Image (tube, rainbow over all chains, first blue to last red):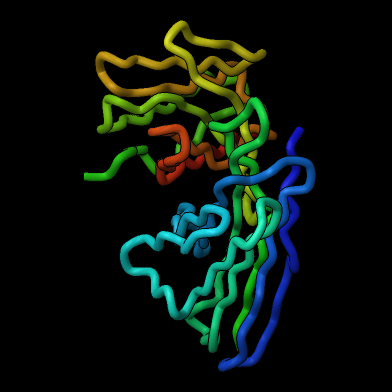
Length: 117
Length: 109
């Protein structure tokens, strides 16, 4: 089946630093990638949707200057948390769609646990 | 109004029990429906697609009721390993995915 690779799995950083998370589709071209975050014991919250070669569409309440999303190719999207603060500590997950024959199915990365000290 | 509404639970059931979850949706033009399973601190994984005719995979049965705009997931003979959060997902316009908030299931020995 289609595979999405996300890394790093864990990040611990100091407040004020920027953190980049990568999401790659390994065996298919992902026309659309999604970024979510999930706080403990809460559901997935969609942050933004990105289509290759165009600007990401952010959900209401998500700061686009804080969470920079780049989807420069059909196999790679990155999320950069700029000037991270402790309240940004969360579980971030990407997903991708667009696999041949499975356009409507989502494939998830394994997630990144971000801890900001 | 949310696109997808789902009871967060938790549903606490004994091993061997039958349990069912529902998800209601507001957009009648929604095209496809899925159930995903998410374990704690892991990514969601596709459990099964949902069709109007209903589909079954072992102990799991999924159903779609377009007239009443809901989907359901039935788990028979619950196992301890079924404990997880179950997410319903609907797809609109082929590339818009909407998630339910997830229903937590705890299967007790």
